[in-house]
Length: 173
Image (cartoon, rainbow, N blue to C red; front, side):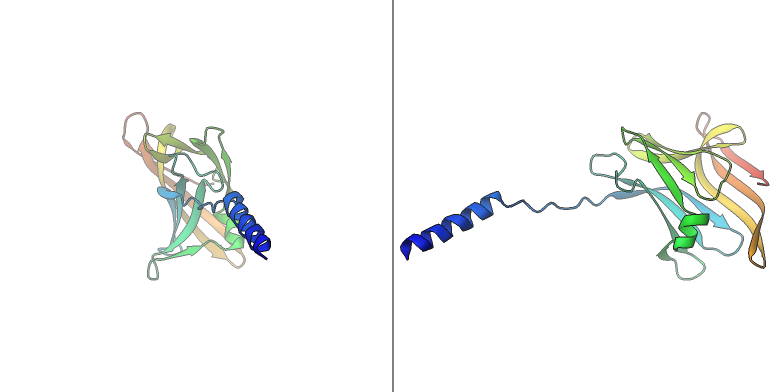
């Protein structure tokens, strides 16, 4: 009996000693990159970089996009499957260093969007009116005709990376 109790105690001690330690999941910190405004209503689609404790882009999901329902009460909502797949979604190509990434928007804006590290923060960059700029917002003016959507024009807003000047461009896609 004593031998059995001793064996159970040894087994329990070994189990606790060699049991994997619980790993606390890292919660990334979000940093604002840019947003999309639309003529339809005041709601915006916000895009944020997710940064890990090491200061690098979060490997699992370096960039996130979501609604901010300003036309309602400012609620934060996920993009629907259709919105992620066809309109406001994107694919991210993360650099090996995890300090930069390329964003490929599902709805082609005709421009390459890059995420770069700038000191302790991450910024989105895009060409605006011929100059590489920090990307702040896009405005899309569109109208619906039945099931189809007609984009009348797109505006890009940002800051020239070299001069710090305000950059703006309006174009018809």
